Image (tube, rainbow, N blue to C red):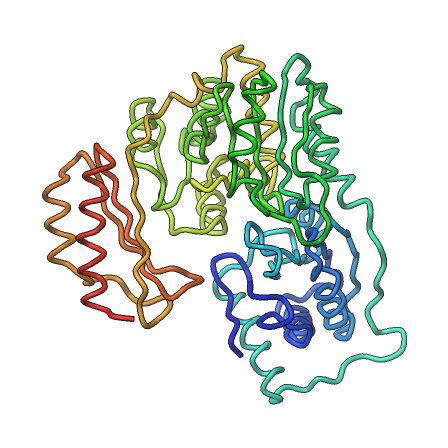
Length: 445
């Protein structure tokens, strides 16, 4: 088996790397490893989504699992349905990747991303099925899984997002939404319109091949221009499956996940609703965020990259807010996973309640220049401890308390990511170049 679980499920070129045969076997494996009698299955707008859905669902039903087909919905809608019913879940999406890619994200019963040990169990069953060393026969007759449409999944999720404002509204707020021609194309605008906002919509006409095509959170230029042209107060760019979002202020400036989490953390802290007066972020979060939270008396809890690790830390400490620089934000009192539309609604609510523009709210933190270099290496997921230690130590001495350096193996590619933060872009780039060269010399591809 060539495909493996990365930081967020299985992902590859649809019908080449991620084939129907692999998806069918993964459906069987997920049913065996996760247990439970029901799965909620959703997908984004990619042309290959229906193909892979049919295969995955066949695998689940062949193991006697009932399947509820949510259709095209955001990833958090699947998670929310699983959480509400105790079912397991699967989302067919490659998130922000080009349309030719696709992926499968799994949720354990109750709507949580899989912990490492459970994920390893799914992979073990998957391997055995593909290698022919596992029994493939299943139940017969009435014991075969039942497959039914479940349009209520998207409807119930949208209602919950609206209810998160506890009766407040967004009237008077002018918002531009970039739906990435993805899963939020219908439900995202509907939520904001029902909350009373004045809404303009970009890239919400999916045709199966245009998801993330020069639009959405990975390509926010259209949104930035549209917000300024419309005189809007807020722009929101979702990714293909709408589990993350980036924001744009009235001047067209991008507001990333770190800034979103910072402003929401401070708002909750001031209202006494930030549980534990702490927030969970990953090692990639900007040093400026950490400095800003420290100045406000908010503890920063750090995890590995991946929203499932953020969720684990939130639950271990009974905390309420965390996320990633990429725009995955988890409001743990409201959801079990990152939710771009929910996050956008919370941003808009903070703006409306405070009467302050987004640029002012986001200025709670000052982002230090951050440079990232990807260094090809021979092995994916290699151990970076002890790698290029002399270069790293020299860089740390040079930066002192004014910057930060991080080496991290990618969970999806055979690269080591070198991240440097420094007082200036030029210095960060210089140091990143030196360290990246040392990493390449120490571990050639």
